[in-house]
Length: 318
Length: 308
Image (cartoon, rainbow over all chains, first blue to last red; front, side, top):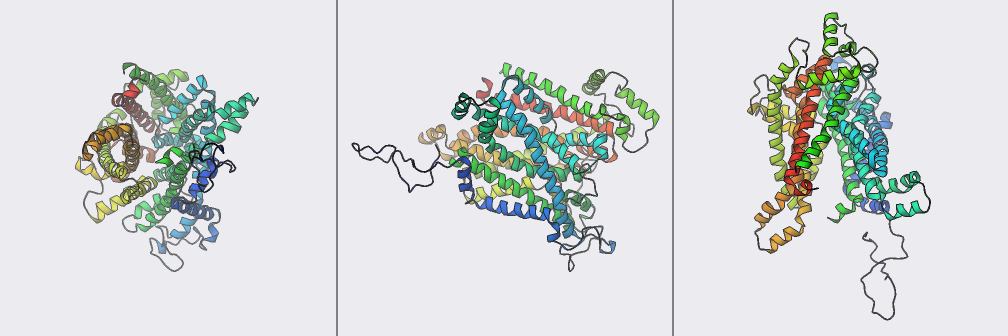
């Protein structure tokens, strides 16, 4: 039973005159019980971790959408080899890369690629894994087994190895861009989402409110979409948030290995990869994009952690 | 127990066939000439092409091709790399290095992960706990190649405590720094897993009973809490051994460790398609076997699983 925050409203289950009032059953009957989400929001608003993560993510999204607001420098237009590996200069606060490009401008403009990969890979994994996991959990039986085995096959391939194989394919080799990286990450990311969704759906499937809906004549599909999925969403959202961060790291790792985004695309992974050569003479060109990447990933992981604490009643009790 | 192991083993079989089939299918049966595809933009020497066609049995029907490839895989008949050396011979040379690296990384993450996790769990909500939690999040967030470069630069170049690159003679002591880098991300997971597990067990009835019997605090912690908290941690560590071997590609590339990962990294850079397929297939095999061993270990550690 959820613990009510509004302790000042005290009601008793039944006001019986004969027996003395006993403060045993405190139930605020005239107050709507908070839903899972309302209660989670109530908790989240007080968590410094959640606030910090949200503000950072908001800032990163704004940077990705409107890079022009944050820098006047064109990231690729004025690269001069005379500036190669130069330190900070007026108008170029973070110095220059090996090619003489402005580190800060590339940092700002690189946000978009990393964030796009993270968001769309997460959405894709959520769509594929969520649908398959929900069907597997709700239907059960042979369909559950088939989907579980297919998921196992993808689980058996470590992400980097699988990505190496996929990126060797003619289609992917010739059309390397943000979307091929997204597809690769989705292919290896969906089984985890499917497992979590399946577990969550199974735990909700036999709840009384689902049985009630079914006995009122709601079809199986409608019961799944309207009653089961909304109530099984919490753990899936937590995993998706953490995965968003992990996918961004994966994109950078693939780009670092030279099989992710093509070098022409500005991304933190590519910038880190390009900065390897000057690591010992000018480590800052590597450290700035690495720091931007880490802060972004950390924000999403912190957000996921905060959401987990807020949405999981079992964890909250502890 | 026997039944459980047998069942896990049977479940592994479709996974093995599925994973190898997928690799083979992706590489050899999508539109386009697979041999040309393996070479990218470069022209293919007809002799090499014919040899590869024979090696991968491309004149046979697809399913026959796949089973011949499987047969080659399990008999370690993996073909030659671009310099003409048999891939199996190359792997025999590089595998011991990677195994050494993975064992060192595993030791590192097990020892430090369990120590930090236990202390953080026992002091839940205090300063040390908070610091460890934030630090573990940071470790997860920073990409492994950044950690690698930074440690290589700081420890290897600036401080000079370790050799920044390993080179051909990869002895145990040379591998410590790469192993630390390789194990850092998993260290974060071990810490968090141990901490959660300790916290869960700290409030268990049997712990209260042990304390009520008058056992000393160290004995309660070590014998009662720790032993029961280790089950998920050991499982994670076991599964991680397989993952570390597959994931060593980045670390070995950075530190120039002559292991499986570096061989794969070079093959990727050179676009040696056939070698990539062979090495990845072998790594998948190792990964699946490691997971099977872990499942057996799990049943051995936790009686609840054994009789389920």
